[in-house]
Image 1 (tube, one colour):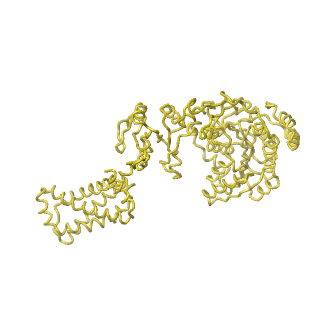
Image 2 (cartoon, helix red, strand yellow):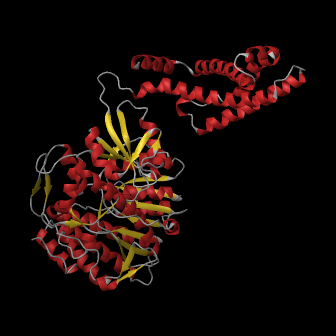
Image 3 (spheres, helix red, strand yellow):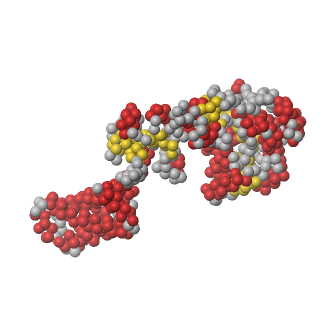
Length: 623
């Protein structure tokens, strides 16, 4: 039987649309014949019906052209059979009722003997039922073969967790794929338990372990795109011990926007579970420094810089200037933005922030109103062994940008800072704290019209050089995960959320404030590593191990977001807080910076650390 169904399916799929329409026209003519005969049989009796039909042969002959033309006019042959849904039922109803009405009117005008009224009603109803039934039957015959694996093809046995709209759509998509066999649904809603969705039963989560064992399930698909991170964490904790792969559907925003389809499954990732629920952004804060304005982003090709550019582009700036020293990174973000925002005025600048002449020329040519300064070296161990470059790029680059902003009366200047600037234990944190001091000092000038704002936050998921991509790569390569210390903890936030908060914080500032973001609860990296191993379907100690390699130079066990917690204050945004840290007078800052730059140009590491300690007394050098 399966062989014949596969053959029919293959032949049907090779036919063109016009041929398929012709086939359904013939099927409908058979339906019209059956429905009118059944109508007479119900009105009279089965054996008398034939004699009665003959009495109305003229009107019977009119049935075929009138109904076919009516069906064609209402569009009953337009829907693709595989994807026809509830709307087809409505179209069939209009066709059946309308064609019967036209038939009666035509018979009256042509003075043909008319059917009894009950026959008209019965014929209309039977036509509707048989037309819909014929489509369901044909679809079952044609596409039933799609879910029968060909010889040698092994289906992946799956359970769909979530019997709502997303789960139902996912089921419809996957039943057409031979590589999947759906065991059933699981849902937390007790009202759905034991119900049927397209003939497939919904089970309680309590039955999940039994289902996995009984049916030898390979994967559990989380079909709840609107569920928050907390709910996802709870579900994963419930099922990860079952030893099956956990997959998920794309997020609701991605599905609604049309960027992806609901059946584009992917393995659930640690990024789906980390962090906390995002507060809905304030559109007024998002647009304040961007909408209709000329905006420049330094470090436009980096993890944070590129996401800043993406979100700025969505907020309709007058012009977006990409300022980046890395050629390939600039090329990548430029091509991406041109593809998604072809109407936007985009300017690309391949240059370093320490190139004062180039920076001033760009600001002058493009009448910039807002600057987001994201350009910086951020990798802690590399900075420890390359002090001079770190100082020149991070500190001198910031000073050049700040002086240029002041000279050109830029409205708003936002520095992307880090939690490592708080009581820094490494030179990367020191350079970011000194960058903050520069903005704070320039904010003290009465003549300065630029609002200088700083935003601190912790680690972002999937940023270049962060621990999550490192663990992913090590797992993919079958190597042990490397962890610096068992007790090390970090804050985590997704890059898109961090950027939304940066933009909003920049709009809140009056000048000189340090804003810090609510990063949620800190995560122990050892727990994160164990979770990633489980999500990969591996077993710690059997398939893979975790190696403790010791803290790297300048690395802290935990990070802070405030120097003095008593100086913090809430803002109108529940996830953004402000603080005013101690400020160095500008004249003292400038002298110390001159000594720092001289040491950097001479590559004098000892002198660099001494100058850094002078500028940031709370700095605890790894030396």
